[in-house]
Image: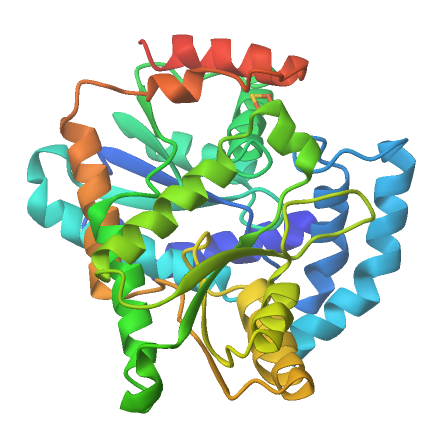
Length: 384
Ligand code: FES
């Protein structure tokens, strides 16, 4: 089934990028856009959950090799139902392809010396899987590969897992020769990303009547993280805080705001308050108008389209007596966001620095052997 889907995806992608191939232009710079991905169809849900639940960088469970597959199996019908309710699948692939295409068109214009540029999508848990995409890139023989994390804020559970998977892949596959590798690992405070979020918020604020507008609570929401990871020193909470701070600065501190954490799973303690608890808490305090702002993901996905839109903005809002609640769109294909992507890559290609020294550090309390080996492998990879 995996192979079948991969072939179909490859065919569709080759058709979509056919113009470039027909023009005979070999990409000089390959940009691999890394993300967790999401099932495009409900029949991919089980394999997607299986890969998440057996990835120890993402989640650590006791007897994971048995418990992980059991949880994946058990949760499949409930998660399939949620995907059906948002139209049958995740739009992450669609958005990432569009973002990549628009980014490369712009890069070809603003950085012709590093072109032609070609984007590739590498997902961690669903097709197109990063390992398959690496083979596709090798086949195209670019001079340079940029590994571009699509998580603006870095966490070892998300970005780290994607980078570790590339290291694992090349532990048992030959590294192609004569290619320069470099890494864009975090960019949560890039001015154009911040402007994109601010504009998405302004668009929603404008829909409130003027008399209410200044009192609307801007509630930033990001995927939660187990406190165990926070205590190891994962950079994620501080990087999310930095993005929130910069967006509010861009908005001139126009409104009251707060940060909450969504999508916790399991019984162990995670970052709190949960986004639904924060909404309930503010309503009790008499604050009844909200804009929810997903600050950690650059395209719509199940957590925005289902958890925020259906479970909170519709069901919860009615239950607790919210007056008005709106949700800021993810960056998606906003022109400012496409400018952000292209500028980040163009500046990176110009820079002498192929990897951020912060990326090569481990969390202070990291005891994961794979991180140790992976960081030292990247140090060498990016020094060539
Ligand atoms: Fe953060 Fe290993 S858990 S570097």
